[in-house]
Image 1 (cartoon, helix red, strand yellow):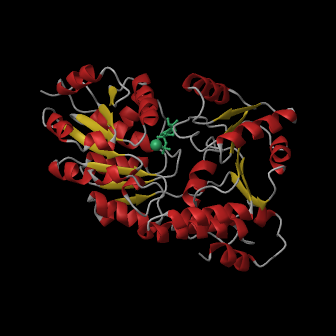
Image 2 (tube, protein in one colour):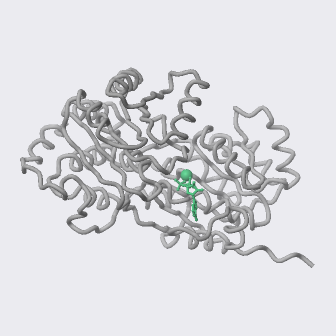
Image 3 (cartoon, rainbow, N blue to C red):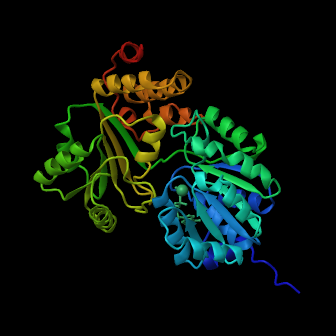
Length: 411
Ligand code: ADP
Ligand code: MG
């Protein structure tokens, strides 16, 4: 006779060591175990990985995880490994690919992480026929949609693979998708409308603020904010300059960008993660996959790329639930640059991007509740006032924001 499979809560306690499911996790896990195709939309930090890792432990066979970034895959593999889940990555950066493939063939893997371009290739498809596949998990699933803020054409190649294994359950996961993008992801990945699960996006402990400000204000602002925090700057050069300005005020500061030596970058990251009062000045290359729950503030030194990016980046503050600050400093020049970027896009993508920049301009210029603007963008119906953003806390001078938007966005 066969030993009964452990229940989801057994695995949650014994393997992951968590006392309970959070938010939507239990519902998503149950759907996956029942074989129902699902698109889970859950904010950053909500615990999306567990939604496929836990079923991967229970289900017979290997869970194939599609993920867009090698660094992200390696972080997740290490985390899974640390709790005793049998996980491996199959990427160009791995020199143990032959070993991974033989472990996979022998049915010794719970999780196998691959990039979309590899997953969609014929060679990988043949390999999949050699072992039982428990589940396809498509992480960062907004990459499949042209409406998404980070479209990756490779994600489009996944559909034929999924349909080749039509009986294998599929779970798509993303943090950021407005209603339009949501429908498109479901459509692109063959997930039925009633398989779309949306968790609440509100992060009530984050105090949002935005102000039109010259760059010189950044160091003074950061000096006034306690604890560890991230400052997002737009260029490599700016990260280094701003870090120096902050250090001059007596605050500990590091910088991080893609132009640094990998070891130097890893060291800066590790130092930030273990510190309670370090300021990390970084390009947006920094933050994805970093597990630091006590980030007390995220400052944007300049406009983020889109309202989705803003939500994701600012959402790295206060994951422990304690009070945190998300403060954006922007200038009219940022909008001019954004408009130039829009004009360089192919026409079919311009409309969606324009909507994102417009949403962002509304967020920074509104005299009303900023949280309400953010949440409405993600399809929620929040109250008019949150009591925890700059505008709700001190009613601002009302100026004609619509006029400014019109000027900035008329292409
Ligand atoms: P996401 O992919 O949604 O941004 P992750 O899967 O990276 O989030 O998880 C974020 C953090 O939450 C991780 O540190 C993870 O261990 C933790 N976590 C996940 N599920 C739970 C839970 N049920 N209880 C407590 N912590 C959890
Ligand atoms: Mg994730």
